[in-house]
Amino acid sequence: MAQKAVVLDEQAIRRALTRIAHEFIERNKGIKDCVLVGIRTRGIYLANRLSERIEQIEGTKAPVGEIDITLYRDDLTKITLDEQPIVKGNNIPVDINNKVIILVDDVLFTGRTVRAAIDAIFDIGRPAAVQLAVLVDRGHRELPIRADYVGKNIPTSSSEKIVVELIEVDDADQVSIYEK
Image 1 (cartoon, rainbow, N blue to C red):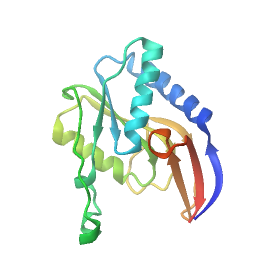
Image 2 (cartoon, helix red, strand yellow):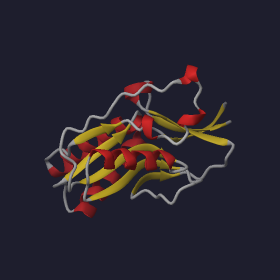
Image 3 (tube, rainbow, N blue to C red):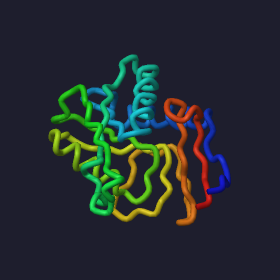
């Protein structure tokens, strides 16, 4: 896989998350009864960063949880015995019933990850609403899902791959396009 371009650097990621935080606050008229839920793995770190931005703007941190969609994936039947998924569980520190849940993920592609996350959320409780925030929307949807908050739209071809690197897990903050 060859890197074609870096489309977001550290500053661009920071600006995108700050803009998403402002949009989130404006749309929800603050953060009362809102919970950020990061989808494993990188969505968790983005949710934490969004919560920090919201605290800088509003003076109050939004609660952050994390969700593991492993058992909700629709491709589990294709996984071989030597590829068995590791389930890490969910950690949502507040009751989600009647709350606005903002699912946070790094890349929106086919929509299947988001569908799995919504299924997992509804197995935990009954939120008032579910919204979606993504750092990158690359298109190619297979399900009727769209993000409410997007850091950057990056149209891609099917021969390209978006790679999000975050300092918490990858020792860098950048989004790149690779040729498969």
